[in-house]
Amino acid sequence: RHVKMQTACRKDIDRFNSQFLTVFESLIPADEERVKQKQLLTVLEKLVAKEWPDARLYLYGSCANSFGFSKSDLDVCLAIELGNNEKSEVVLKLADILQSDNLQNVQALTRARVPVVKLMDPVTGISCDICVNNMLAVVNTKLLYDYARIDVRLRQLAFIVKHWAKSRGVNETYQGTLSSYAYVLMCIHFLQQRRPAILPCLQAMNITYFRNVDNVECAYFDQVEKLGNFGSRNGESIAHLVWAFFHYWAYCHDYATDVVSVRTGSTLSKRTKDWTRRVGNDRHLICIEDPFEVSHDLGRVVDKYSIRVLREEFERAAEIMQYDPNPCVTLFHPY
Ligand code: GTP
Ligand code: MG
Image (cartoon, rainbow, N blue to C red):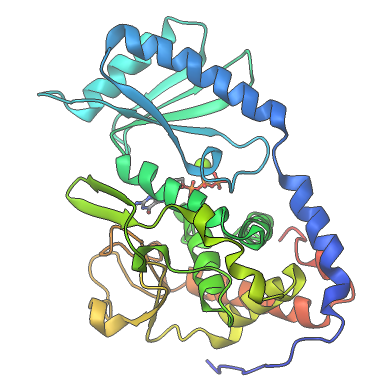
């Protein structure tokens, strides 16, 4: 496979700025959705507190990391002292409690990799997944949320990338493509790499937030309001950044040797992580290090077929951003 080095961006790229911003704005959830989500969470908290007074509910994923589209599901984590119980027993009990209330389609999935209760609230129309003690997800949700507060271009870029990935069918981990979480990390890494940088590396700064979760130390600088307008020395427009993001993944990323690492604010070599060969089902064909579970490659789901699909999609997007007369439409054409 040839690595084609394209360099100069089309001269009229900024012409498309307002159109990309319109796409972004059309995807943002309305305030009344937030209100409904809070209502549902309050209902769930009351039901849980009756059975387990010491348990707590946390939101995680797109409803809490600020990268959620309108009409997205609610991801909830039940934090509870397990004692001698299995997670699956708690999931069954929880489903029982929720079933007896007015909620619909309550399902306990006890044999999934992550046991969950799924339900739909007929009052708000919101669907919801509740898992047990998945506190790493709660903490990485906060990290994404804090990065988004530093520079608006992260949220804009990630919304556009997620919308592209969903439109093109490359946001399906069960089909070997990448999760939304992985795409957001790719965007953060990319903005850390711009010169001047648009985002700092929060895990390389002095620590103001610390949690030990399942023996993983999660530590970073979370007082991002003190950073001022960190990215303002870099004036790159959103259209230019979308162009450069796809250009990077189509022509510049070294898939054979490099690992994307938000934790270090840089790329690492696969060799230093010992991610050079397939181990079990982890093929490491595109490597994205989890910021806290550093042995965890979010590209592990990608196989030798889906890596081709992904790279062809990056190339298609890069070509559209370079040449298409109407990139804001063509980029999101359904596959
Ligand atoms: P959409 O639902 O597609 O809008 O995005 P989402 O933000 O909910 O992302 P996704 O469904 O990919 O993941 C939900 C949350 O689960 C993420 O925000 C992470 O907190 C967590 N998560 C997802 N995948 C992983 C993973 O492989 N490892 C870890 N540690 N957490 C993950
Ligand atoms: Mg989700």
